[in-house]
Image 1 (tube, helix red, strand yellow):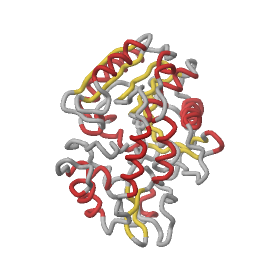
Image 2: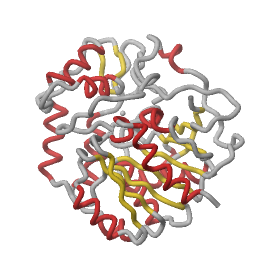
Image 3: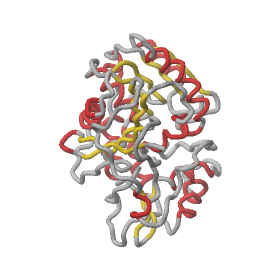
Image 4: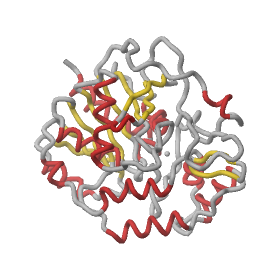
Length: 347
């Protein structure tokens, strides 16, 4: 369970953060798949909170995701407790801020977070355009905005100096914040994010992929079936992939659509795919753990080069995991990063 905290991000964007630390006060579980009032435009439904792996990736069988599936059929029933002011009393323990990837949400961290046994204060942020956070029609969805939002969360929630744990796009945001604001960051965990440029062809593939979605979907079963079996990017049937995408859908009068705006996701992605990020990585001075799944998007050679470039880098690998390593294998992920967390957070 998690307590919701509100954060004011860059340009006044309202962000939802979720404190997973046990303590007093109302709690709920960040969820996806919410019912919207009839006629509500796609992407505008406020809800407690999805990184999808993208066109060419398919999550492996998922364990420990109970509580993150569809919620009751009306927005009022699903809303849960209201937000807790960010000035609420803090739990004991050093601060950890979790940043999800593109199309992700804070709840995707829940299965792995529950397996961390250290006395850490763990908060996950719904980044702009995602989950329960604002999705401003005009943006911005720049690297600067994402980094400024993360800095605002650290400062307003009293997490600094924080340990940042980022996955994919969230990992890039984390290391750019660590490079820009070393005063805010104690340590860093990078989960399956490349420092090399992906290129224009990758962005065109994503554009084509989004255009191929048969949205709106008539049901969540149709979502699971299409993303798990019928999507042309699926090399073989993968029910876990279908289940993953079902968690980032919301119901409208005409069917099920993603909670996020695909155009905003493409805009967000365009801010990093055309450029390499080795320079900012080299500016990270805090202890950093680079974690990859054996079958993820970050290759071993590039991951080890990232460790070499980092002034205080370390490397870890999770066998049998793909890109969504914390979501696919929460136990192994927690066992991998917990010694690092305990080492950097122990006084």
